[in-house]
Image 1 (cartoon, helix red, strand yellow):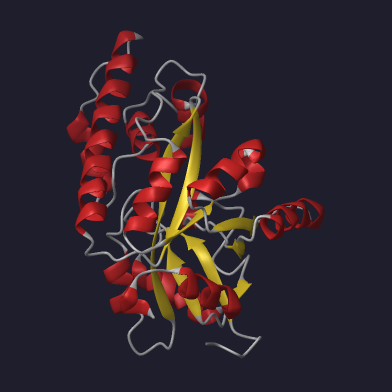
Image 2 (cartoon, helix red, strand yellow; image 1 turned 180 degrees about the vertical axis):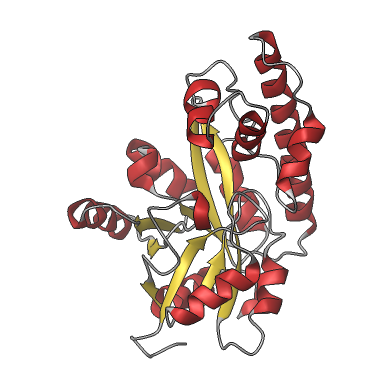
Length: 282
């Protein structure tokens, strides 16, 4: 149990293992500069960044939590579920992550095909693979290929013209319903938290997520008014959920936030640990 109220944690950030420019060492350096006691690496649909960040943190005094931000789908709407303190070696979780990686590849291949149909020839899955490095396939990587091949002046333009939800190259993610993702997280010993509810706007479904085992609500998020954050805190309290928060830092890929912009007390980490069924982190 952590009793020092001055110790803070950033429970939502990304690395080069998904769609961020931050290396594990960058994360630890930034966390140290901000005086943080704990970070959670919440890369999209992967735990690959956890161990490298844990290694980078050796000797720093900074705790690194195993975590991920899972994609799910509800009536064609993307809903992100944060999973904290899961057992990385859980067989069911490992199999699920492999499956998600394959779905991301299939989605990327379909987007490339759609772009070909509107005349954007010469883009291959290999071109995108060269951009991802250690990460899993995502739209930012395809956007960079579009820039490199002269189809867009920058990545923002590539998204707006070809890859946004209403653009010709967009393909909806092939993901499961939130309740299934919550179940996967719980079975691997973790705690499921609804990410940035003020952006996702599925408030009416929160009770059904709680029934499925949701354990927390990310009520603190960058550049959101205190009024809205308090609104979601009240919802969390009503349902007995842990109130979490984080910066959602992506390095240079998200200029409006940075590691440590939003933090929570270590009492939140303690609450997550108490709710987790992962015996290795007790």
